[in-house]
Length: 372
Image 1: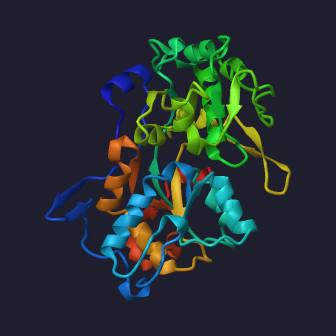
Image 2 (image 1 turned 180 degrees about the vertical axis):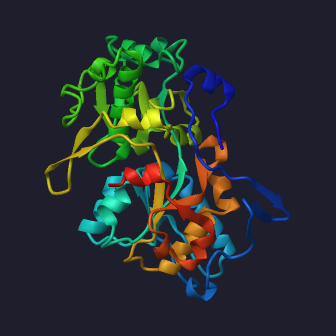
């Protein structure tokens, strides 16, 4: 069982359970929870030789997955993984590209594990593997006076004081209809209000959005600026925005100043209390056909699949195998970016290629319940 550092537990009294990697490198040989990883991850190396890896991944993965791809290239003869065949953008954009524009990739990875079952299965994928989690945090510009003394307990007050000060830059927000982080930041605000403002889910949210909770959220142009999440670090460094709600993985990898949230507010907790709180909230997003759909909070869980139309499915499976190995998990945990989950949680175990059998276990019941 993994637990938060003592100081965080004392402050929040909330625990979250994930399975975490234990790895030891001995002469290049990794031992991973009883699983031994030695050479090329391909079940049949000949099946992937002279192939080019293609990746569709959530924007947050744009520095980590290329490292995994390079490791795969180093360990598997005859394959390439150029930047030109790797695209990292909003997770809903990724799934829509596969279903609506015929985009093809050897692997597709998203920041909300509900998207692959909801949007790709069964026509475009027949399984997913949850491989890691990372909470929402507030990343901020430390040069802004309003953030002096900011902490996990006062971030909302500091943020509201910042964006309502004349002349200060706004909060950067993301498009909830294309990027899960766009609706996750809404839920973090609402959960902060629920837990620390007498159950008032609008207490923080109303400063940043002009429409009621539960509806299609429209940003307040006086306090927010709609941007692309992948540009968050640049937006902060140039003063275009003063703060963003983003994943800890993104903040860590890009060296941003940030404060953690309560694990429920950060969508990291998966205990009974957290799941009950999540079930009380929802927001609306615009679908690819122009209609509205309702989405609710869930723990942030990143997942991956090999699409059924993958150009090189054996190469895609090899990538997953490496991602779930000690080498792959070491990349994910650099700078505390991700809390890895091993064995990976799979929704349809019988559909997983044999090469991945040692790497996965059936999805926990609480996580499966959120897929329905």
